[in-house]
Length: 110
Image 1 (cartoon, rainbow, N blue to C red):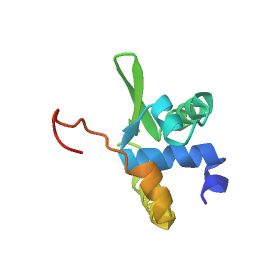
Image 2 (cartoon, rainbow, N blue to C red; image 1 turned 135 degrees about the vertical axis):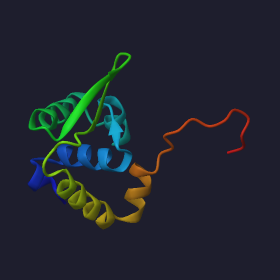
Image 3 (cartoon, rainbow, N blue to C red; image 1 turned 90 degrees about the vertical axis):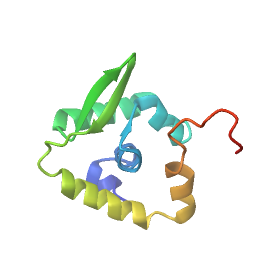
C-alpha cells in the first residue's frame, strides 16, 4: 500500500509496527511479520533514525526505537500511517497489531 512511497515493503511494515505499538526493537518487529529477516528491519530502522524520524535508546542490551518528537513532519507521517492502518483488512490488523504488550498478573485466567 505505502511501499512505493517509503521505498519498500519492509519500510512500510516497520513504520506501521511503530505506529501501532509506539516503540519497538528489530527482532520483535521481524518476528511479528512472520520471520522477516532481522537485518532488513535493522537497515530500515537505521535509515529512519538517520533521517531523524526515529530516535533510539538502549535498554539493557536492546536498542529500542521510538518516534522523534522533534521531527518536523511527525504529525503528518503519523496521520498518513493512521489512514493506512485503517485501510488494512481487519484480519491483517488483528494478526499483526493486536499483540498483548503488557505483562499479565500471575494466576489470572486467559
